[in-house]
Image 1 (cartoon, rainbow, N blue to C red):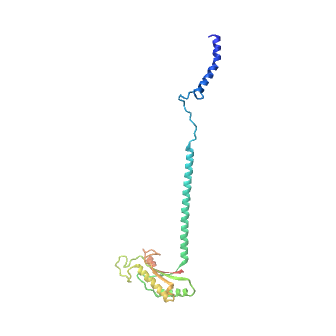
Image 2 (image 1 turned 90 degrees about the vertical axis):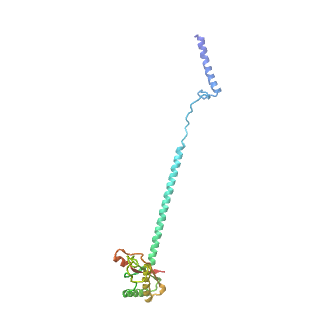
Length: 222
């Protein structure tokens, strides 16, 4: 190759490079010269995953739900405490309102008042009348759990009552009558029979049944 041709090629190289750049621009090529008409690998775009935000939202919702549940449990516990306190206060008020004054035992099937019981009631009546009172007398009769006619149902009763409630009512009425005879106004005395309820001892033993056959006398504040 002659020196002249070599020199000519060297002079024309910049011109060809410039034309290639111009052609790439004119024919809408990518900056690196790749025509748009050709398939070009797409570069992965960096997009912050939405999973991070959703995970945070779920965590916040779970925390809020747990907090609401804890508050609900605390409110339920507080309500239970208030209910228990109200019941205790009611029981305390009832205990103050009524006071067990005396307890009188009865023999099985009996409703009659003994002479010793009559003397006791007279002494109690004197004390009751000795000073002004705002109380009334509640006479409450009870039985043991032995049914009328005995457990076998074939025993002959010493009374004519057909139920334990009627038997306990007769006992309470007998005691109330003794208080009236001792001078207590009738309007200040109330008698009621409760039958085989409110046991204070075990009915499986003779001693327990003897304690359960009773009349309880309460002083009740008006």
